[in-house]
Structure formats: C-alpha cells, structure tokens
Length: 340
View 1 (cartoon, rainbow, N blue to C red):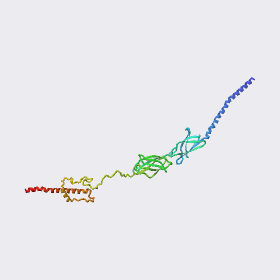
View 2 (cartoon, rainbow, N blue to C red; view 1 turned 90 degrees about the horizontal axis):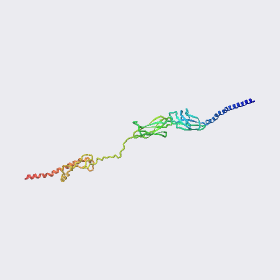
View 3 (tube, rainbow, N blue to C red; view 1 turned 90 degrees about the vertical axis):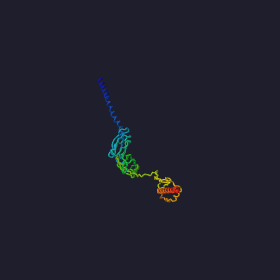
C-alpha cells in the first residue's frame, strides 16, 4: 500500500519535473517571431520613396552624354552617383523624401563647363525631373591694332565686340598694342562683330565693321588697322610779321634802313663854308636837277646820288667864289710897290 503511494508520488514528481523542464523551451518560440513583426514598419519608407531624373543639354539644345553627377543627403552623405547616357539622361531611384544637394563634377565634353550646385527636393512616391544646361566654354580673343603701312602694333585703340544687337566686350590695346579677353559663346561656331570706337593717337578711326567666328575654348586673334592722319602744322596766332616795309623814301638827314652808309651833307664837310653872298650867287646858277614832285620812282635809294652830286657842286662853287673874292686884295699891294 505504501509502495503504491510512493510510486504515484514519484510519477507525479517526474511529471511535474517534465512540465517544468518543457516550459522554458516552449516560451522561447514567441521570442523568435518578434523580429518579423518589427520588420513590417521598415518596409513603409520604401513604399513612399521618390526618385530624381536628370536630362543634360547644352545652350544649343544638344544632349550632353557622359556628364557626371553626385547626389548628397541633408547630412552631406552620398546618396547616389552616376553619369548621363547617350540620351543625356541619369536617374537616382529609391530616395527617401527630403532635400538633397546635386553636384556636377564633370561634363564629359571639352567644350562645356559644369553648372553650379543646386538643391533638389524629393517628394514621396514621385519623380523629380531636372534639365541641366551646360554652358559652352568661353572663346579666348586677342585684339591687335596695327599701322596699315608698317604693321607696327599701336596702343590706345578701343573696340566693341558683340553679336546681333548686343555688345558683349570692350577692349583697349595696351602698351604692346594688344588686349586679351573672353567671349561667351552660344554654339560651337558663333559669329561676332568688332567696331573701333577710339583710334590710337595720331591715327584715323577704322570705320568699317569687321566680323569673325569663334568657338568654345578656342583662341582667336582680331586685328584692326589704322592709317596716320595728316600732320599739317596749324598757324600760331601769336606769330605776327615783325619786319617793316622797305620801300618808304629815306630822309635826307638819315641813311636808308638796312644800309650802313650815311648821306654826306655840306655842314659835315671839311671845306670852309662860303659867305652868304657867294652862296647866293652860286644858288642862282645852280643847275642841280630836282626830282619830280608827283612821282615815286625816284624815292628811296635813287635820291642819294643826286644829293651827293648837289652837295659836291655847292662845295666847289663856294670854294671858287671865295678865291675870286680874295684875289683883288692880294694884287693891290703889288701895284703900290711897283709905282714907288
């Protein structure tokens, strides 16, 4: 009787022990299902993801393949990278909604420039489409001004350069006669015009308008030629004639202007001056010709010989009269001595 009870108690204990040993194993099964339940919310953002689609072109409207782009998240981490295909397209899919930063790192073309960075907004379940327009590289222009005959480079020439009705660039040649500049181009071959608005010093303005063609990133030289202006000297207002007329008749008492001779006069002679009676007698018979009063032909230097001749005649006549006046007084003593 006691043996049966012991066996029954042992069986109950074993059974109880078996239940206790199994319970922890059974309780582990629900813990394995926990990750699958928590993974369900992680799939929700994928249903709301957006994308960015890029089309790359240039200013002429042609697609640009091979352009490289980088997409950065709000914290600066890279969210995508790629390059445009043959149609100029590139897509960044599976992006969480938010604001991104788009950077172009290369154009894939030697003719184009990269664009500036820009922000891109990604909305849930939508595709954000962007058109990126890569500008052409600028054309490198070198202006030269030359002498049209010698080819010498000239400083100080100013020109305007433009296309259509727009002026894009103004250049002035420096000390070496050249001036560099850059021209924006809108196609692979762009036509420009050049017009000189200021000529170098001493040269005339180059009036014709010239045209030339330039491409992106390519150097081009533009030359304008100038001709020298006439150099006729202008009269100086302060330059007045200082010489006096030389055809005026000279005065009998002073020499003619410009001559070194003086007119001899009777008062300046060493010959004794005759008395008044002798001079009066001589003047009666004076045959010295006189110049016509109404003529200008014998004025100036032509009167000098007549004055000299007249003075000589007067001097000789006066001397003869003096001798005649003294001769009777000399002979009188001789007669008195003879009679005695």
